[in-house]
Length: 116
Image (cartoon, helix red, strand yellow):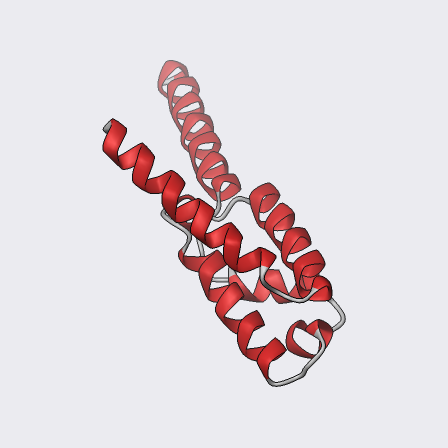
């Protein structure tokens, strides 16, 4: 990653956060909670630009423009809303689980090979 990429990434992030700040307060609060949730759960594509998060802002901007409250857009269970957004996404937990499964399989193979 070059310095130019880092600078461009920061510019994109600042523009993204400016969009968040322009949302009504209830939308901002829910957006920040969604962001925290997604950073903890760790869908892999979350680190690839701001695609998923920008999509959420798009949805929120449309909801706010039509006069809807944020929970009318997400539903009352915001975590379920997030889970639904990433249900088909690979998470860092999935990647870690796969690596653990591979290591266990290797170890078990060594054990069974020694018994033969």
